[in-house]
Amino acid sequence: WGGMMPQLFVSCSINAGPGEVFVPTIETTRLCFVSRTLLTRASPVLLVGPPGNGKSALARAALAALPEGAATARVSFHACTDAPAFRAKLEARLEARSSG
Image (tube, rainbow, N blue to C red; front, side):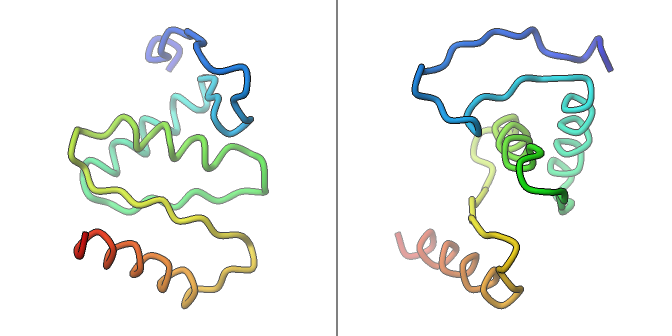
C-alpha cells in the first residue's frame, strides 16, 4: 500500500478549513482504493465512524478521483437525521438536477 500512496504536495489556501485538507496515509490510501473500486463498479459505499475521523474528507477524495461526468450528490446530515429526511434531501437534489 505504501507504493500506491500519492506524493504529498500541499497547495492550499491559508484559510482552508480542516475538512478541506486531505493528507494521504497508508490507511486512507487503502480506503480510497477500496471506495474507488466499489464506486467505479456502481456499488454503494457507506462510511461509518465517530465525528471527526475523516469520513467526509475520504468521500471527497474518492469522488474527486472518479471519471469526468460521474454523477455525484453531496448531502449533509448529522447523527439525528433519520432515513425519511435523508431520502427527502437526496430526492430534492435529484429533482433540482433534472429540472435545471
